[in-house]
Amino acid sequence: MQKSIYNIPEMDCPSEENLIRMKLDGVEGIRQLEFDIENRKLSVFHSGENSEITQKLDSLNLGAKLVKTEKAEETDLSAESTSGQTKLLWTVLLINFAFFVIEITTGFISCSMGLVADSLDMLADAAVYGLSLWAVGAAVARKKKVARLSGYFQMALAGFGFLEVIRRFIAAEEIPDFRIMIGVSILALIANSVSLYLLQKSKSKEAHMKASMIFTSNDVIINSGVIVAGILVMLTQSKYPDLLVGAIVFLVVVRGAIRILKLGK
View (cartoon, rainbow, N blue to C red):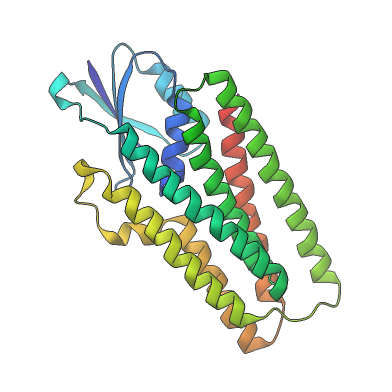
C-alpha cells in the first residue's frame, strides 16, 4: 500500500474537502483519505499508481501538487465512523441552509445585495454537504447528475444576482439598511465558525488544529466583507459599498458552481 501526500493551496474549508471526496469517489485502489485543512494537505492511502488520483485532483483547479509518495502499512489507516460523519454533515447542512433562508429574506427586506449574495454562498455550501450525504451508498452516475443540476442552479442564481447588481447600480435605489446587514452577517459569521469548528473537532487525528484556522476560510472572509460593507454604507450613506461586495461574493459563488460542475464530468 502507498501513501501519496498532496499540497492543495486552495483547500481552505470543509466545502473543498467534500468536493475532493466526491471527485475521488469510485477511484479504484483508494483505501482512505486524510485531510489536514489547516496545512492544506491531503494524504491518500492507495494501492497501485497515483496517476488517476493526481489527474482528478488537477481537474478541480485547487492547485493540487504531489509532494511525495511513500510506503504505508495497514496500521497507518485510521478507523472512521460513517454514522458520526453523517450526523455532522446533516448538522452543518442545516446550519448553512437555515442561514441561506435568513440572509436571502433579510437581504431583500433591507435592500442589501451583499446579504443576498452571501445567502447564495451559504446555499452553495449546503449543496456540497447535501451532495456528500447523497453520495453515501449512491451510484456514481446518479451523484454526478445531482452535481450538475446543483452547479447549474447556483450558476443561474449568480447570473440573476449580477443582473440585479447592475440594475441597482444604474437605477435610483434606496440605501440598504446597514443595521440589518451588520447584525445578520455577524450571526452568519458565528454560524460558519461553528460549522467549521464541529467538522474539524470530529477528526481525532487532527485535534491539534487551531481555532484560528476557521478564520482563514472563504466563508468567514465573505461574512466579514458584508459587515465592512454595512459599516461603509453607514459612514457614506451610499449604496455602492453594498453593491461592490455583492458582486464580489457572486463571483465566489460562480467559482463554487464551476467546481461542482466539474464533478459531473
